[in-house]
Image (cartoon, rainbow, N blue to C red):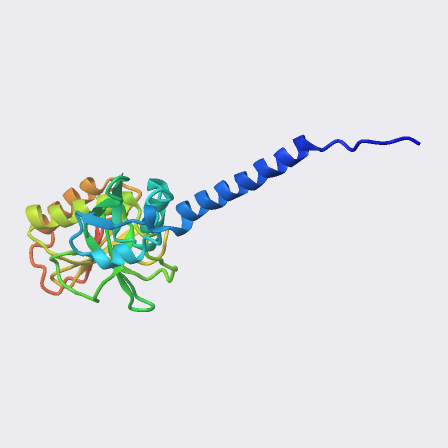
Length: 248
């Protein structure tokens, strides 16, 4: 009769034990990282904000773990959700579990109003519309009336930088060199090749955006000094054609 001796699979049992221990360690790390309060953000400090409330910024963070919070994700989320923010810097203190957000807000240079809906928006030096604005009149702030019926969304570019530069030059030079205020700048289509400027005297000027603006302003001054000294009853001045000035 033969007798067989069964050898114990010590190596296999040891592997199972290591696997079980590893799973327990992994579970512990997962709990510590995702569920426990160990890495929970204790304090969020917001700096540089003037118009944007701290509550709005904190409510849009959507993060509470200091380890899992990255500068890139926070910045991307806040810039997308709060168009009033131009830029921001973020710093983390892991020991104190503290998040510090330094905000740079957009500065208003004008208001754009859609004439088909009467919706108005503040825009900044980059032409970005970032906040709803009241429908306004007057010459204290740049006012653009848009008749193009295009869709506008907060946080998106609505005015080309070249048009902003042109508008700024016209507004300053009309007032400083000719003594005329501006009520609004009208855009009939977009993109556009012309700009209609409504003066504070209720008549308007047609500028070509394809020609040098300062030369058109110089021609306007000459015409007002030599040909149209009395502006009572004036309806418009058209400067769009080179070496020609039409008025009524």
